[in-house]
Image (tube, rainbow, N blue to C red; front, side):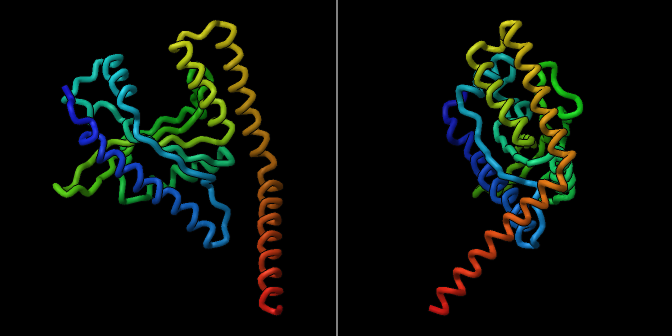
Length: 219
């Protein structure tokens, strides 16, 4: 029986912290080159102990196999504006040498029966501990904002109903998932217009700041 969960989870906490910095760094690099970033924002978490224990019991994961069989103890989410951005981010991750992709699951064009859509990547990531290097598994989920909104609501309802949704609610959730994906599709079709407007807005804000700074210098 695991007695010191803090010791077990410490490498995962370190991995999440490091990966958040690195993934957010991708966004900053695009911005520094005055290019539109495919990443809107990044979040991360280490799975709570009670959730780990529940999943171990539900999936019959032995303690000695925890590190090999549970791939989402460390979890990152990358939010994107457009579906196309998701695949751009995937390509960027494939080129990285500081992590190893073990598995990819495209739930965007192969959505789950519930209507859930996202792109999942399981990676092996090395963390440097005082006792040496330790390679751990982590899961990166890449979604649009619309997909994330739906998934967040569905997750809350799943917690309430323990996965046993009333039929009517399940059908309504599925319709909502299709509506969210239709929104993503519509946004992709007018993507150029949106990006041009965002560029003008950002440039306009920068110009206002520049003029204000210049005025302060003149004063």
